[in-house]
Length: 88
Image (cartoon, rainbow, N blue to C red; front, side, top):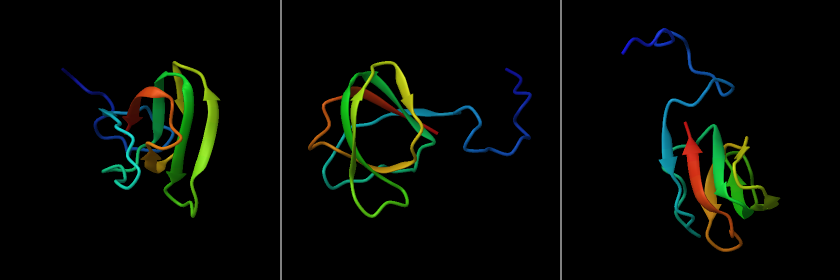
């Protein structure tokens, strides 16, 4: 398969090239910092951004949404959304 963009520099605003399921955890951070999070089943998401000093709660995130935040942690406590996918 030919990739016409293989020589292009990756940007935060560029489409993701990799997707990985996220399992929320209270102490373990994400292995890599994603460009965004896809929310399969809506609800609340408690996370800490890569440059943040405290957790924040995104409330009532709709299923099928892409949350454009570079998360370092997605916490189990306070997260009711499910089927989360990190987009890299």
